[in-house]
Each structure stands twice: as C-alpha cells, then as structure tokens.
Image 1 (cartoon, rainbow, N blue to C red):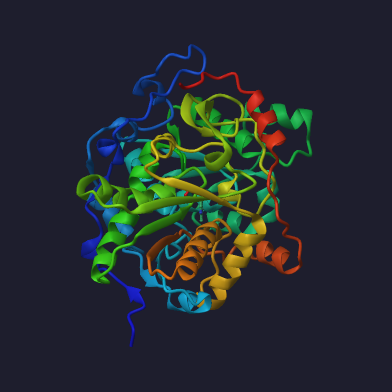
Image 2: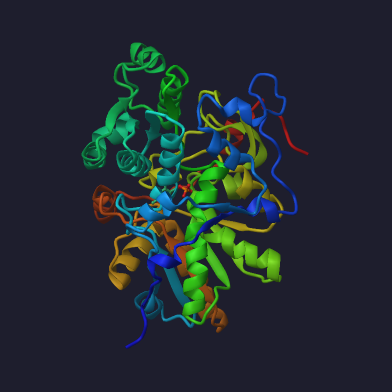
Length: 454
Ligand SMILES: *Cc1c(COP(=O)(O)O)cnc(C)c1O
C-alpha cells in the first residue's frame, strides 16, 4: 500500500514558534500613530492586548518558546496530518507530486485555533476576564470561542450582520462554547448604536465590527481585544504548521519545490511558508512560496505598498503594507476570509523584496478547483482554501506541459462543511467570474491620504 497520510506523534508538536523577522534582510518598517504619523512604541497597544502578546508582536528573537499548557491543548488535534494527493495527481494526469497539510482537523475546522489558543492563554495569565473580537464568516469567532472556553474566559463576538443572518450554524457553534454573539452593528456599543440610528437595516461590515469590539475592550478594565490574522504575533503562532510540515516531508523522503497557501491577511500563508523560507535563508535553498488571493480582492498582485489603516474607520495604527485602500469594499464572494483590503506587514515586506510570490484566481476557477479536489481527495474545502488548490493545480498543469516533475505542497487551511450555501450557489450557476477593474482600484487608492513609502 502507498503511504497517503504522513503522521507525527504528539511528542513531535514543535516546542518553539519561528520568527521570520530574525532572518529578514530588510526588517518591516514601524507602525505609525494615526494622528501624529510618528512611529509608535509597543505601549500604544497596551489597552488592547496583554503584555506578552505585545512583546511577541515586536520581538526580533528567532525562536519563541511555546508554553506547555498551549502544547497540551494543541495535542487535541495536532500534529495535523500531511497527505500525498494521489487522487488529485491522477485526476490531473500530472508528473508533479502534490502534498497538502490539512488544518481542518481542529475543533473549529481551520488553522485559526493555532493562534486563538495562545492568545486566550496569555490573556488568562495576565488576569483578563473577557476577550472581544469581530468575525466575518465565523471561522475566527469559532476558534476564539473554543479557546476562551478552555481557559475560563468570557468571549464576546461581533459578527457582521450579513453573516449572522446567513451562517446561523457558525453562531450556534460559538454559543456551544459559551460565547456571546452580537449581530454587528449592535446596540451594545456607542459605535454600533450610532450606525443603527443612521441605518437600522444595515448588513454591517468587518470595519464596523472591529470598531465595536475595540470599543468594548478600550472602555472595560478587565476586557481585551483579539485579532485572528494580519498581526506579527498571529503569524508567529501559525508557524507550527510549517515546522510540522518540514518534519513530515522529510519523513516522506521529499522536499517541496513550491509551497502554496491562500491569502486573506497572511496568517495561514505565513504559518506554512515561513519555516520553509527559513531553509532558504539558512541553507540557500530555492523553495518558491506563493500566496493565492481572489481576483476580486487582489491587494498583493494589484495593490500598492504604502502606509494604510488596518480597519475601515481609521482607528488602528498605520501599517506599511500592500493595500487596496481601507475604504475598499470587495465583492461579496463566498471566501469571506479573503475579503480584506490589506496584507500583514511581514508578508508585505517579503513580497516587496521578492522573497515570496503572489497570484490571483477568479471566483469560478476556485470553485472548479474545490469541486475537483472534493471528488478526487474526498475533503470538501473551505471556499478560502480553494484558492490554494487552484494555484497547486495551475503549477501541476505547468509541470505536465513542460514535462518536468516538481514537488508541490499546499495548505488546506480549513474544511467547508459550514459552507454548503457557497457550493449550492456554484452548482446553481450563480458563481460568476469576477475581476475588479483598473478604475475601481484607482478610485479606491485615490482616497488614500496616508504616508507613501519610497
Ligand atoms: C481566516 C481564514 C483565512 C484567511 O486568513 P489568513 O490570515 O490569510 O490565513 C483563510 N482560510 C480560512 C479557512 C480561514 O478561516
């Protein structure tokens, strides 16, 4: 029998997170104060995050110890399996060898608990009683609800009204872990009440939900805020994925030429690819790392590198990143986790320095890829994950055309078991090719009055 699933034991869960900043030739530029436009120090983040996470946000240490309590909970679902995609290879009739790391085995069904667990842990250690957050599609809210429940913290989730109405089972899942879920905008905050007064029937947005969650944390002593992507400490926590994958590829007697992951704010891409980038830095290897984004939200392939806000309202520090402009509202594609206007600062600097690559796929292409994957490998992928699959398929087809065999590894960052509406729409022919126009991008970028980067 051929080995399909490459497994590790619980003892092989990594003991440290890897910080790619230590190896970067050009370090990320500093965040700026939204008012003064001067660089801000870590203290500015103290009202929102516990000290240990702020330290991790700015550290240049190459390795950060994972607490035993965290590894202990990781062991509920980690190490995650790495699969050889024999079925997909056969369907594509490609000489390429395709592998995928599967993060859908976590309790909430994606890679997000990899950071939700340590974030809840450090908050608990520092005496915090409640964590607030926003959620769009519900993956992050579910992961944080699970983690808070484990450490005995209250969890408050502001869920974009549209998703709250359309994805009731994600809400119920959060309730099952004891979280309070508010449709955003809500009447629990000043920001929410103001928007409801203007438009009682608004469908909400991630920007509004962030404002609500931040307001609750900033105005309550015992409450902090948590973010599931974009920030450096989130990427740091996700690097357990790539570290496990390296061990598994070694076990398989192979090493990828190409590493691929879908891209929203950059956390699952960072998680899989940064440990492989380490091999490029340390051993002079040439592993290509490719981020896959939707053509309807193409900040990496068509955005600009400059300072911009992380939220729509303009409350966060200014971050140096690839962006489409903080006012950019992406089309309502089903891959809700990829509908973000910007990219994390580390990934942005790496792309600018050409140490990683980016590609974009349209909405129809990714569903075709997702269904082909489900039919050849069995697992129904999350709509976000289908973007990475589409890139892997494109690279495997290139191998066939060129008659070369390469080894491809991609991140299957979550299952799509709560996303049947998306697949239903695809089968009903409602998913259409969507690409934003040059004019739309220019119009959004024209509104930016934030500092440019030379
Ligand atoms: C949140 C999410 C994403 C996008 O976020 P990243 O930080 O870019 O990883 C992608 N896939 C799934 C399944 C998600 O839940």
